[in-house]
Amino acid sequence: MIYTVTFNPAIDYIVEVDNLRYNMTNRSSFEQLLPGGKGLNVSTVLNNLGIENIALGFIAGFTGREIKKRFEASGGKCDFIELEDGISRINIKIKSTCETEINAPGPLIDNDAISKLTKKLNTLKNGDILVLSGSVPSPLSDYIYRDIIKIFSGKNIIIVVDAEKDLLLNTLPYKPFLIKPNKHELEDIFHTNLDTPDTVVHYAKKLQEQGARNVLVSMGGEGAALLTEAGNILKSSAPAGIVKNSVGAGDSMVAGFIAGWYDKQDYAHAFKMGISAGSASAFAQTLASKPEIEQIYNLF
Image 1 (cartoon, one colour):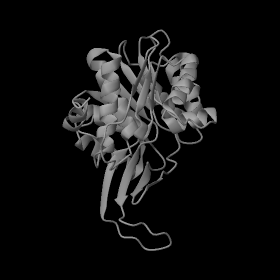
Image 2 (image 1 turned 45 degrees about the vertical axis):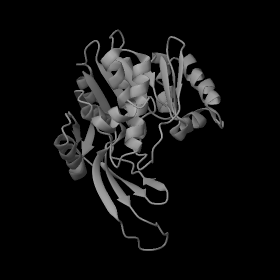
Image 3 (image 1 turned 180 degrees about the vertical axis):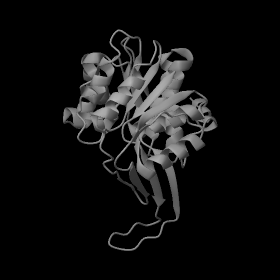
């Protein structure tokens, strides 16, 4: 079974404004409410591909109930922990001549809630896949993902981590199966400008040297690269298309890669599926459907 964990789910309020003007009243031309958060995005694309999975995480208040309602209505399976206080966040995604995001902090997650999550995770079995994805609300430690991975010492659990900076780096000594930084996150980690695909690969290798078994790097319009634990480097340019929505494209890449690996345990196929899913979501108004992903896959 595949499990995703989203510590900080959200309602993504997507608003299109033809020409956003600051210090003025603006009228939207399109709006949409979607259950969001990186782990939920991964689960949604896996669902679209017909791959069973369970979304774990924390929800709170009326917004949390709405996240659960909308996610289940789309066919998703979840086992959320409902917090007693606070509300799940609403993230605003403004699409105009450029994309602007306003992400809220999210509710407080106390030690009792963490214990409940740990209890659920202790039921995972050998061969299961666990995806740890996205930010965690303050004041949770940047070691929280590392502490979760330590639960599985001695078990054959396939761990995927998609997070930023220390939240990701702290997991590397425990050898996660896959990490997926994007180019900008690599630049933040190493405090440098990565101006070519070769420099991206160079710094991705440094993460592999710190413990990551496989490193998948998304580079937006420049494509993607995969460094495998066997020492192979796979590169691909980005498929041609009009970008309509970059929100969730990286999460879709993670889902596509997992789907490909789950299907054939072949890195080339998983890489191709990852690029196809990420690109398909970028070219669509919402997270990509199976036909949209397959259409791009068949163009390679």
